[in-house]
Image (tube, rainbow, N blue to C red; front, side, top):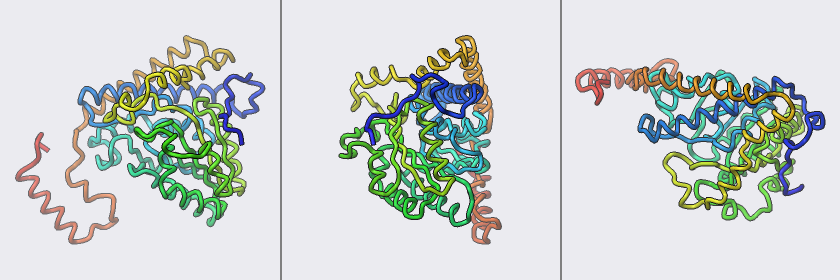
Amino acid sequence: MTSKPQSLLESRKKDLGLDLSDEDLKRLYETMVRVRKLDEKLVLLQRQGRIGFYLECRGQEATHIGAAFALEDEDWIFPHYRDQGIPLLRGVPVQALVHQVFGNAKDDARGRQMPVHYSFREHNYVSISSPLGTQIAQAAGCAYAMRVKGRKQVVLTSFGDGSSSEIDFHSGMNLAAVTRSPCVFLLENNQYAISVPVAKQSASETFAIKADAYGMPGVRVDGNDVLAVYKAAKEAVDRARNGEGPTLIEAVTFRMGAHSTSDDPSRYAPPELFEEWGKKDPIQRFERYLLRQGVLDEDAMEAIAKKAEKEVADAIKEAEKADPHPPVDSIFDDVYETLPPILEAQREAMRADHKEHGIPGGH
């Protein structure tokens, strides 16, 4: 295994050996631009106090979007909190993501989740968890269930380099390997686990090499090259679907911003790193490739950007018009098919209390 990440964007289109049409390439690009515009605007909203918290994926668009493009619609995704491009790729409206970030009455999660912790059951996109690594073991279990039931579905789980230090990483990798379950592990190595650099996270030459200990292939790719990520993921997905077991993919990338809007990366990341990785911006690199191949021209790219900006702006306006609070008694919904008597009594007591006292803002 080479420690140098595999790249493809410098190749000629005919030399790639990928089953991607021009329309596929356009869709990849449009999704990357849409999530970048979403991130830019929502970070500004948080700074203005219009939302409380946000996690952006700026600089990492190619990793999760490229990997998810290799999946079929019926495949399952157990993501982490920096993959908001995947719902967009799967057809989730920007509006649904914005409602969730606001946690308003139209939020599918009814305000129960932290912002950017999406869940879309109809798209097999499992709820994001804040604790690191929980999705890894869950994904391995889901993949094992697919194998036991004889289904052809594949499971993709994504996580950061910091999550590789969690016990869930070992448990999930070991279970999937031993059972030869159809699971693809996407480790998004963005160089920092909040403020902890990779050098203090692992003494291994790479993260991909850890796959050897579990008895599965490990692949290291250029995480800022959407085509390289897609190629690695497609090969891993095909292996999994054919009953050949799991794969670990290490996508080498960089978080071009703060860990979250509660973080200050200037306290721990040297400025020259941002300058260096800024030259490897995944969207700009893909743009140069698409221009070179004649897939899109500059006018088309500008139109895509403007359309994405309007889409996000319209979604924000709609979210701010909605009731800012979900119905107060919705906390009793969505767990039991039939509410137990003791909870019915508690709900009625809460309704009476709320009717008498309310909460600030009149809700």
